[in-house]
Length: 139
Image (cartoon, rainbow, N blue to C red):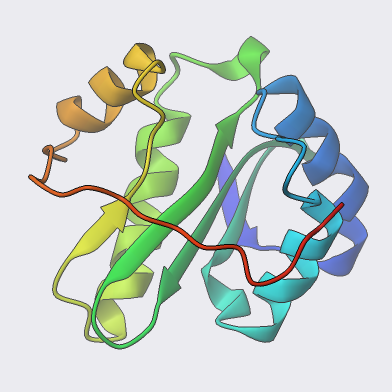
């Protein structure tokens, strides 16, 4: 798998992949999420290609205190080949280069397979409660 930063021409393939991986939720417009990301650390929005086809993505972030990982997706036909691990390691290295001491991420409690994946690559459960507040509606 070849990894590189997202380019505008990738948008439709990326959104299609996110749909295939069930990452799209009604309250987040994926097109708006992409445009928002391109305004902040676009170098942390990574796609993975096999034979010129986008099969994986990860969206990293760093706001000066903590890093974040979002939109990790691997095409169902390409899972269990190590691509998720490769992408996470790649974006972790880029986030670390920016001076980040710790990365956070959120996974729905019901998504036990993804929780096991992250635990297998060194992520642990923090004793915190995640709170959120919408500042803009995507609907």
